[in-house]
Image (tube, rainbow, N blue to C red; front, top):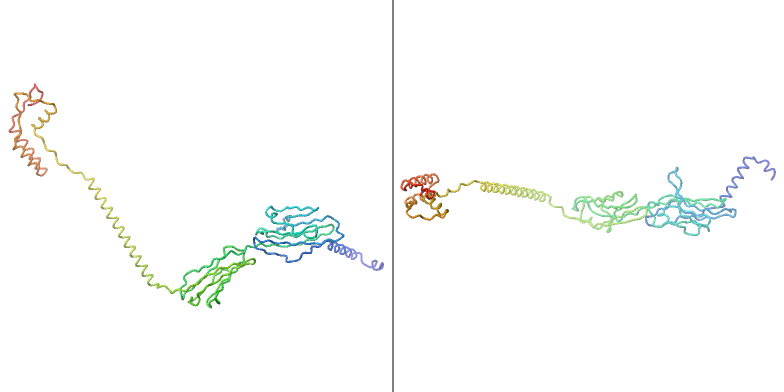
Length: 366
């Protein structure tokens, strides 16, 4: 044996001793959890991240367990979210995550497994469990991917469902993590031979539609965490008379045009009528002149205003009946003849009346 160690090269001996020590240390603390390195869950579900371990009698140091969130940026530090050391638990992550993350078992007895309830898309990350008990140390990483399950899709048809035409059935889910896959099936049998579907867009195209293609069609949308579906009842209608529709549309347009022209004509007539009435209302009309009073009547009016009393011994001239008749007949003629007749009647009356004399006793002619 001494000859063996004496003949064994010194560098190789040192390497052998180091490997034995490392192997002994590695076997001291071991994380024994198994399972997939990636876990996919739907949003709102719960997930368990396993981390069971064993220790060796040679591990005499304090137990230290750390759960960290590995940073995707290699230049940034990992985020420690949960720690167990010295028999105490420390929550170091965000309050939102800490309210949903906890140890499943007793960390001091070989189970550092944690659970996360009501997972969110923001919880997607790589998590690392590290167990240290001097001189032993071991760790395990697991990646959590949180996906959104598809929302219930909506099924509808684009265009008409006429016989002989092309029918486009559509299916669309408003929410869901990509990739979403769509699949159409017919509840009562196979899809029509003329049908083609697109799994990415959710369109089912049926050419040369006929009565035999009618029925209930089912659309199913799915991703890695869920499946939803909707249905549509396809009908087949006789094609409409396109010529009749066009003729009816043209006739309707002409009637509408005639109605519009009639309305414009009525508006013009109404405006013209209002303008005419306004002009007539603003026209200046010549009133008939008032009948002229004879000098005698004027004197009588003047005397009545002054409360005149007849004085004895004074005589007044009176207007003759013939003069009044001429004046009345003259007013019934035209404006020019009436004026001329009034002047002649006035002159004739002045010829038959005695001239007026001014009486200083009374201050006016008598």
